[in-house]
Image (cartoon, rainbow over all chains, first blue to last red; front, side, top):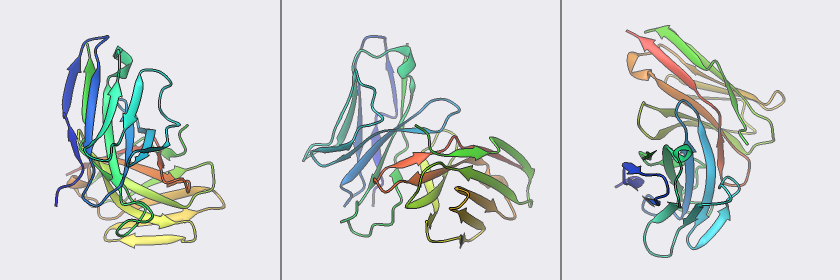
Length: 118
Length: 110
């Protein structure tokens, strides 16, 4: 029973390149959340998605960042033209949602993708 | 914006002692949750307390919630070296997303 799978676990990019981070939710989960964690800090909410819908993107930077959760395949967090300040750990979490299997309110987290921008 | 503020930011205790971490928040909530994060790893859910509950226990964990003061505390009794981790509170504001505090870094010395 696989948990939330994130890849890559580590990604190195040069300034100006694109970063794509992938997240496969737990089986049966239809809700995906992306969070960013800077060193020695807590998690900052970025975006909340359901299949083919963005529910809440209030934490997403206005430029360069986008997220999707297509009908088939993993959720993707895309960062265009990366800058050094984008270096962070990006965590994906999933939940079954209110209409899911058993909604407990908790989120299930992946191990994170650590982006380093040179 | 961040919802929770945690106190203390860092806590160092000896094995066998109790560890208490506090969390304050700003808006009304549906529930409050505590998560643990080992260094370099993802977050693991520990316990959830609903807004109409005042206290909850799970093994060596005890969580309290005071909605009038907008605060919660996590108590870990009889701590072990393996409890060394960062602990985060998170609030569910009815929108489905969780807002996390800055965390408390707990170090338990053997």
